[in-house]
Image (cartoon, rainbow, N blue to C red; front, side):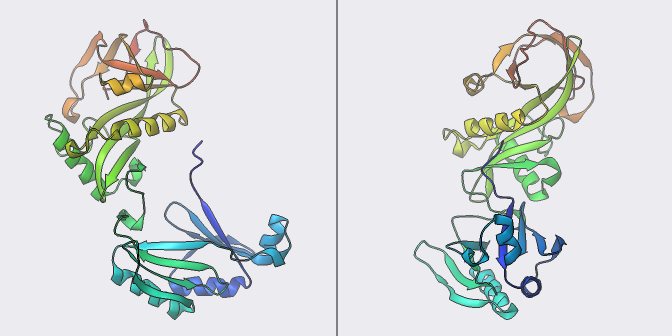
Length: 315
């Protein structure tokens, strides 16, 4: 279970209608709500406005004990001009200025305002935190997971360029060698993707049993960033997500030592697969695996001698 996340931030407000009007003037669009609460979609999370009396009752506390507390909500922007614009828009909507935007000691630019109920917002430009598409923020060096359907054109191109730098094999300008993935794990440096792994979920037959596997491929670290443990960091993230998926086993074709260090072991099952080299359908092959590695994700052991039918291509 991924515990290091926040999915909902709820602000207790004295007058829900007035609070909704304020955030609407800021440009926020209500997506859902029931009586006494309003929800606004953010980047991968939700902001909620909840009547303070109802919120106190929901928490089992006296309403008088609720306050804004020592907490700050923040919006990061790419330029100082964007910070100034956002600050001015907040004041025009009825916010109270707490600190005008200015250059700050840590090298950025920021200001503070408070909404109608005193909730404090910071608007800032942090030159050390490049923003992703849509203003999303991933800390430098942190692993970012991208579900394939959410892979934007810019990231798709960055991954394709990374693969081209890392492999002599012609990927045809694609961000994958044979087939698209179900999700990717990436690490960025200064906004650029410098390490990547792709994972597919596949059905296969091991002996007579239909199994679900996660398959790892298109592993790449920018030559200028090798030796920093980026691939090992990505691999641990991939294993954890695979454990939370329907997959029973994690498979890959490779020989790098980091795979054995993570618990994968080499197997030599006889296997059947379709040649999809270059993203083109070719011959069906029957041969013994020579670089297949397996990591069980459940309690079911791998059958080393069983025929493995990939029901498609390699990873």
